[in-house]
Image (cartoon, rainbow, N blue to C red; front, side):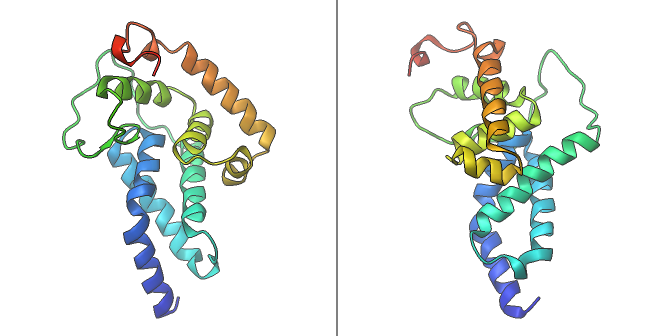
Length: 181
């Protein structure tokens, strides 16, 4: 890689890491795993950086999402279901569990939505993150995931159905003042 390529990549990482980390956080639900996932994606992008000519954020986001889905298929993560979540220290900041603070949304509602999205299977979760957080079209989402548009629509429909019946989003789980917004 040329010195110009290294400088361009460094500028890209400095300018885009925050948004890419938020995407990884939405996908994984864990800031540490999200950081590792982002590092893996950036490492793969580094190796191909000379070939990246257009839309580097979309290119790296594609690597990130595909790496998330493939890593979920091939590795056991040692997850054990528990009734109560352990305390997570150091995860506060301006970015909530479901993206940038929206100001009008109650933190309890954001936490309930994040829990419901985390319960989705990896491909459905990726489709929801790309469609709603990144505001991609179904065609762009399909291209990012390397699947057909019809598959995106199918995953989207299944994800919405799962969210509709999610116990995390039940009427008694969401504060009354946030319903209907």
